Amino acid sequence: MTATAGKREIYEVYNPANPLELVGKIEFNTAEEVIEAIISAEAAFHTWKNYSPVARGEILQKTAELVGKNSKLLAETASREMGKTVAEMEGEIKRGASILRYFAQEGMRAEGEVLPSASETNMLYTKRVPLGVVAAITPWNFPVAIPLWKIAPALVYGNTVVWKPSIQAALTGEILGDIFLQAGLTRAVLSVVQGPGSVLGRILTEAPRIKAITFTGSNAVGENILKSARQGMRLQLELGGKNAAVILADAYLNLAARLTIEGAMKQTGQRCTATSRVYIEEAVYDEVLERLIAEAEKIELGVTMGPVASRNRYEEILAAINLAKKEGATLVYGGGPAQDMGSGYFIEPTIFTDVTHDMAIAREEIFGPVLAVIKVKDYEEALKLVNDTEYGLSASLFTNNLRLAFDFSERCEAGLININNETGGAEPQAPFGGMKKSSFGPREQGQAAKEFFTTVKTITIGTPD
Ligand code: NAD
Image (cartoon, rainbow, N blue to C red; front, side, top):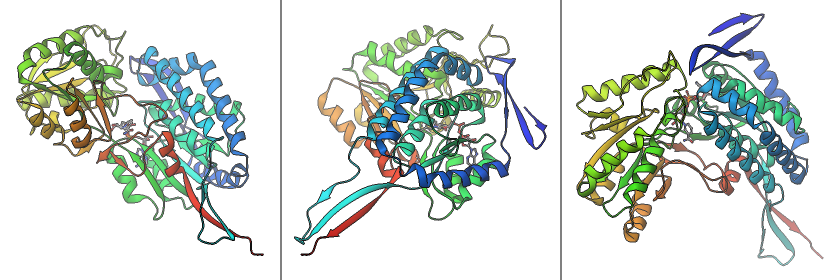
């Protein structure tokens, strides 16, 4: 809901668990203010890039400590504005702090390499240098970790940042922005700009002073950015997924069922890496289906599973469930708005069987607690169906067959391969990203982050006699 105060629009944030509860208000920045933030970031770049990388790392280290100290505030605010449970948020915040600590250490690592030269009098070496002003555009579903895994590497490598959080995670964004200020950054080095993506996105993608955009969000918006971004702008787009798990007859079936349901339902299914399809070998199909349902039964709405993030998401997920029914899939668990949860946007964990690959539920990202279960003859059939998607973010295989584990790692068309692990999850030291329509540009996190946030200078120094 928005109102106007002076030139600034006011956005009212309501709790998705209880849509009558006003959580807070956010003032949207005007276009002039966003342009001013970009100009200030460009001016600050000339000072920030000359800071020692060690000093930049120390600010990130301090930020990590402050994120830890403010964990309760961050977790409760995020939970109330986008619905994730406080426990899930606390896990995310811990991960956010380790992302900061990892990139703080980057300030002490090599910035280039010395190479042999064909000339005896030349010294030849490379040095990584920052790009300038980077825009970070982030979604609501990881309101702390995703911004941090963009902002931390951008800053430590010497860039300044204009960050636009999702308006569904705007209050958390304000707190995180203030934490960076307390850690010693200026507003010009990292500014938080608030407002709808359709308005701010246009300013950020067209601004000549912005050298790169790192974006995480939906394919629709990602494709829009790809089309509208100023020519020459560096882009990193992390988009949607339709992630699959495969359970073979030789797998530890209890583990496979538990991790498949966790993969599908954690964070109410609102993770880009969530499991949304599972292929089960026919020999164990009935047994595994029973275990999947038993695992889903353990979920307690409002306790271990939060609401979906907004009214729009609620309606879209229920529409996807209805479409699956209409297209002939069989609903075996859940399937509706939760009973006895007041007006909150709670949806039951939902499982469908008899899903065929021409159904929307097998092809489209639902981004909610919905799992499609598909029976397959064997591993080969499963692999073919896993790859039968335009997405390529994450996939899992549950097996004890080492040969098939390696085969899956080679032939599965996904950026994140998990054997005997769920589809979600990423560690800060490991590259993160997908194949096909799930990602565009260099990977995020780990040493891969350097590829996006820096460019390389090759330097030859002659020392003639
Ligand atoms: P979204 O695309 O609606 O919004 C993401 C961000 O883009 C928000 O800050 C939004 O305000 C902004 N935006 C909207 N219109 C814009 C425009 N025209 N130009 C520039 N920016 C604009 O996505 P969401 O609903 O916040 O997040 C859910 C989506 O994100 C899902 O599709 C999910 O799969 C994806 N996601 C991907 C990853 C990944 O790493 N691959 C991680 C998390 C979420």
